Image (cartoon, rainbow over all chains, first blue to last red; front, side, top):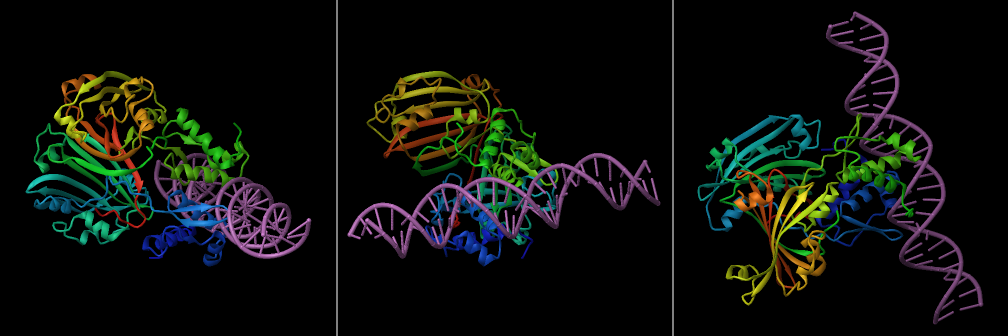
Length: 243
Length: 243
DNA sequence: TGTATAAGGTTGTATATACAGTATAGTCCG
DNA sequence: CGGACTATACTGTATATACAACCTTATACA
């Protein structure tokens, strides 16, 4: 468990742990740089880096001359939350089922290592699942999982619990990246989803981070005639222009 | 112009300047820390901070033992935020232009009145615009606007300021609804976007509310080969992403 | 020719030190 | 009592130094 980890990362983890567990509520003062120097036996620059990065990541706010504080958690834009498709379908009163197409360990190639931001990555879990609503395929899931973060991933039987549910239970999700594209299905996708060659599809590509490492990379393919992505949420009234 | 600015910020600005202007293309090598030390007459730690932060912000990628490089930035539109496509394109260092296809007042029909949640609605502003990146159409905007909320909407010349900019300046956005679908283009869309009949498109349908009333309804159509929808964000520190 | 080794450049981390700027609490003095 | 001053704590920035790990290239050797 005690992997070789930089000191500043250990400090960050310690603080994040307290924020996530709820021990430190929003607005609460966190240890000052000098207090961290004493308790962790590190130099002030190292403590400074930990607090500065957590501030840039939105977890803390700092006031010169006063201290560092836990920030109010920003309203999560709900557009593309992680939703469990099984629950989603059940919520509509329909019947959920799935077909497991592939499940195993694959060797990493340079492209995959790049996606996972880990050049040393050697092997990955890989699963392919077709999700069905009332027996009709509505989503093709092609997922790679980082074994170092979820070592027991393949132990699960994915016919009952979805991979999303397994992953959410195993690791916290710190960051999400989504890309949505329109595509025409490959012949394999046509076969698995049982659609025509000219049926456009939505391809939702998602990477999720946990503890600063990429936990899973997934491509979800939806036949346009059977699924659309939807969201509705309140905003904070200021349109985001600049970057 | 020579504001009091930290040294590391000056270095960051200098690098960003080169990236934004296009002088340094994606993949190009960026000066190493030691080279920055010499050219800026700073310490290596200061150069390190500038490069490290730009990497965290997604502009650079670093490889130990090799060097630092400008990261690829694909043509992506942020999905969940209201962003001005003109600025988005300018940010990528490309040239923005637009063609105004339609602009005027239209009578409301029952379907439109339903969308705007206002049975008494009689007339609406309607515009159609093609947005271009380096002269290539990348987005077809078909928008209706509620006159009671933005009465002077049609007074603007939309070749310079985009409708999004006008609307954001005129009214606060309290709530957003998004639906994303994959479609094949209609013949008119093929003509306006200059794409083939078999090129799939993303159709982003968006309603936005202001002061409990629907302010605008817009359908944005993107050719799949030229644009994808993108978002990346941190999740709530407490992990309340479940649905 | 092929392989092992060495050298040099690059990033990653950590420390000690220094000075500046800001906010707060307390003290002194008019 | 009130204002000015001071001490203190905290963050922000900058430097010099050190060592480790990694990668590429050149060199020496079998």
